[in-house]
Image 1: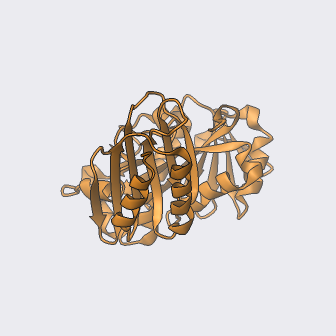
Image 2 (image 1 turned 135 degrees about the vertical axis):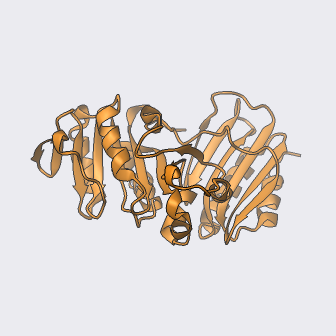
Length: 308
C-alpha cells in the first residue's frame, strides 16, 4: 500500500513535437490553484511567458506567481533533490519530457530510485496528442509509447481536423481518459494535477481484445476470490518475464485475506496497489496493454489464481 500522503506528487507531461504542450504548461502556471515546480527537459519546447519570469538562482527559476521552474541537463535525480530542498515553496511537480521521449523511464526513476521514491510519487502521465498529424505520430515508436503509458490523453488541434477518429487511440490504450484540448483550453486544469493513476471506471467487464497494428490490449474478467499469493506470484511473472511485451496493466481484484477490493496498476515493470475506495464485491477485471500479447497465456495465468 502506498504512503503518498507524505510524498510530493509528480505529473509527467508528454506529447509529440508540436502537439501543444507549451500552451498547456503556460496555462497551468497561470491558472492552477496549486503552486507548481516545473522541470523542463533542455531539448523541450516550453517557452515560459515573459511576464511570469522573476529571477534565477542555482538553476531554479522563480516565477512571479510563486511557482518554480528548472531545466534538466542530464541528471533528473539531482534536480529533484534540489527541488525537495525547497519543498515548502510548492505543492506539486510537473515534468515536461521532450517530444521524442518515452515517458516510462521517467516514471521508472521515480519508483526504482529508493531516495527519490521516499520523497516523490507519480500522480499520473498526461499526453498531449496532435490529432492533425495523428498518422505521423503513431508511426513513431515514441509517439505510440506516449499513448500507451498515458493516464489521460488531451486531444489537440481537433478544431483543425475534420476526420480524426478517437477510437484508434482507445484501441491502443483503453485505460486512458480522452479529453479535447485546443490551445490549453477546455481542460479542467486542477483535475490534471489530481489523476491518482488508479481510475478504474473505464475498465471493461468483458473479455475482449483490441488490436492496433502490432500494439494491442487484452481485457480479462471473472467473478470469485483470487488466491492472494498465487495472484501476486502471477503478476510478478508478468512484470518480469513478459516485461518486453506487457507495457501497462490496470485492474480491480478480490483477493483472499484482504477486506474489500484491491486496485492496481503497472507502468512497464513498476507495480503499485491500494485498497479501492468502494467494494466491487466478487468482481475481478484486469487489462493488459502491450506488443504481441498472448491472450491464451494471460488468460490461463489469470484463471489459475481463482480459489477452488
